[in-house]
Length: 462
Image 1 (cartoon, one colour):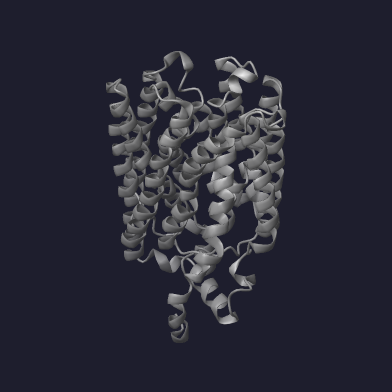
Image 2 (cartoon, rainbow, N blue to C red):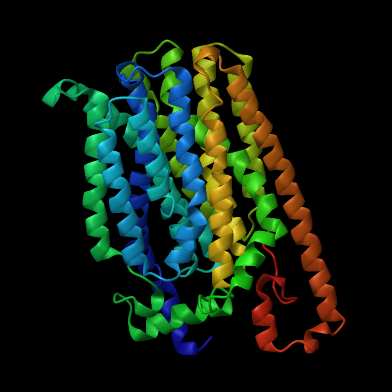
């Protein structure tokens, strides 16, 4: 590294201030808008629209089908269109859909709105997850992913507080309280999207808040890590992403985390209410869970980045989730169940940024990483479609089936994590042995770059 760049190393954190708060705000609104249907339900949505339990669950499930289907296409578009244009544009689209959801009158209207909400929201999370890899090194990724993703925890807390306040507007303008939840949160989304058009930065090479020397430093440090975004668009990189074993095994880890995540975010207010608490109390009792989870997500990510390891900070939270959901199954005592959900949530939210960072660390080549992360998040979020049907009204108040299914997916996530751990360790040892045997001399620097994460010089993070 050039000597005069070393003094810049401490200054790159200004990127955090310029990038993370706005990205976190975008994701906060995204998570708020997809999950507020749970808050709307306990404010009377299901009764006012005359929805059966199955119809309500279909409205939850339909979102994830289109959400999963459009994530890879969105990330391919992101490679062609500037992030400062594409991300705010899709945000305006889902904000409009969210607002219109407040005027639906029946099951068909709500289902249609949820389908289009999935289409329009699909690009944000995989887009931002990939976008961050163009700014930060491998060992810096989980903390930034956690700061960004902790917005989901805050959204959960904020959603409860907001729904509690907005619910008091019942009858204003001839609308129900749950309608105002959708309308006001949709309008807020559009307003923030307009602000994002003017405040989001694209890539380090064009960032106006950096000096020319700082831009050169950031680009250099990413290229040195194999994090450059400079590779051309070639369909072979897209194929490589779809055929890479690690992505598909990682998806099982993802399901082990995201199924409990959506199970809690969509049904937590209902679960708490069925334990005997009033709707307003149930809304407020979600707040401490989400706030604590957000803080823990950042703390765990900090230590994961410091030690340069991913698997321990995923496997241990998965084991803690087992404890939490086991408590929910074992007892009908409201305090025990609330404690179990609290423990589970405090493990889920730290684990989720880890599984995203883990895969992004192990995909080299900008296009393959973009597509691979979209596949991971897209297929992984089908877990949300499954989790939408875990907690059936007829199973209240114990919800043994729902909690049991969560435990099954968590178990699969633990097994998949161990497979990745063994696979990565074995691959690294084989590559080190090849270098010791002199195989490195058989490849040019260009050939090694072309191979990306399959190059014998690339080392998997685990």
